[in-house]
Length: 266
Length: 266
DNA sequence: CGCAATTTTGACGTAGTTCAACACGTGTGG
DNA sequence: CCACACGTGTTGAACTACGTCAAAATTGCG
View 1 (cartoon, rainbow over the protein chains, first blue to last red):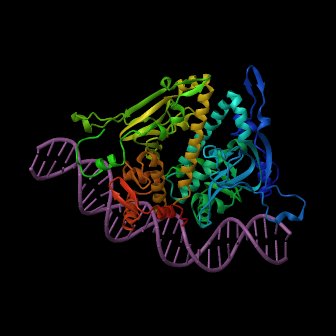
View 2 (view 1 turned 180 degrees about the vertical axis):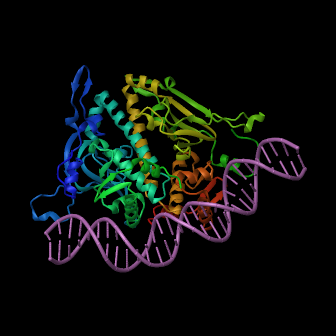
């Protein structure tokens, strides 16, 4: 986990944090439905029928001169299109966006490795937001049509889907509770840092540092702050010794104080 | 349920809005798992094994002088206690609260008739918040232990639970998207009014009026505003002809404008 | 190196909070 | 019956945090 290198550059820290490595399956929220099931006294691995592993999204051709041509496969799926699959992030990050009628793009969620994308579309069978890769990312894909066919035949698989959805229900509610009713920039950012660090804990192996990967702009958009304000609060937190900033890598130095800030009620 | 009294405001409108009548089962989010299942070519009604219908919470003895002694059965369940059941609101409202270590009570959700409470506790088997009835309310209760026993034997019931959880997944995400990244009091209140009206549409039969039932205090707490600010924004909306206020009853007069406000990005 | 995108800093105005006072309805007790 | 406390909601005035606009600094990449 700790490399000997000292460069203050992201790549080293990404490695140090395990970023851009794929998440271990046992830590992934999709895991419940990827595992073999025990049915009729035998072990069945049905996942090959519906699971598509580690698909790169926004992979850039490493050696061509095309690097800066706007890579178009950043988009995993688009808002208001029919559900085909649900996804788990393997590596990288995805931002979830909705576009209002005046063309403004609002970030409504971020998904880090091990987290699901699109399972909330199962009900309406339509995606509620667009999912866009930030940098090089990859996903595992579960085809809903094919999964359903298997599920009809194997009740044990349904049981696993229930486990998956139950966990998601908890995850979503707990995210909601992290942010609802927070208005001050300080408590929003504190809540955000704690929320994301916790979500990444299994992946990074650390409860006090994280690699945001996303731009300040996207974070500000998500939290409903101006990027200038966000920048100032970041600077303030660092000055007060709450965090240490190294580009997109954030070290939480005083987590308890951040928690207090996050729960602060003006 | 209906008192003969003529007091000017709320009671009459509650009747007009159908408030304090129980929601029709077909409009309830619990409905998926309350219905009979078709299994092995026959129709089975298993719900009697796990479903407890229309339990009053905070019912006041109607004719005693005890009315105003602090009624203690307002609490459906408490934060950080083991999950026993999930609930659907039949009538009234519930507020969901968490208490921070300094004793401050934060409202993290409101649940109106037809909405579920506690299903996000299935994963950790622990309630994440306290559920407290506002006024006279009632719930249907599904005992998890007993439901699970039935589910193990009847795969069709599991399918119904999947349907229920899928819908909840959508509902929760859509609530999250309604509020995340909103900071101005105007857009928060607009988003809130539209969100709650929509959620109550099937129950009240109206897409433009609603009975909040909860105090301004609780609404302000939920939205992260001061009650003074909330009061001012309510007054402003009414002055601008966006809404009409009759106590806790709100009429949405210009829904499109409210939607625009809700999606406004400073 | 040099351009472009991102991030940070500074000065100023506005929106929301804070604190205080007041209005209203309801229940309590003299 | 009235006086009073209490919860809830509204209003006013001063203060503060965040947004706004402009510009500088930093980073990333060819």
